[in-house]
Image (cartoon, rainbow, N blue to C red; front, side, top):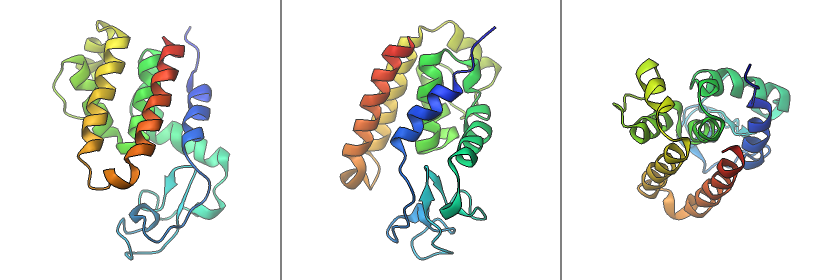
Length: 174
């Protein structure tokens, strides 16, 4: 029987995410996903108005955020089917860059077609690939992707600190 690692991993993930913010310059804080488009509802625990436009972000509880992360990220990305070191990396990447993008990084790391959906072929390839290799390749692709983003000059250092922490977690999970 496998142990549910989600409670440990969500505590790690939430250590990267802040409290409530409604910075007008952040497109994620707007329900329309662009600065000035829709309502300025903000972000809390990493749950953003652009992704959850009908949610009362300001009054979101930690418990509600955890339930959203389990349902919409952990379960949808199939993290529970992966080795622990890989599962946390996928969860964090999915939260930070979207499930499809993070899944593509992991699929490339496993040497399968990168369609953005972790299915039977991807899972089979990941079972026969060393988890450490998956973690290294996943994060290499993640870093390369991030350096090409237009907001790299503003957020790049923070993103790299986040990935450095995640690599330390991978060593613990290995």
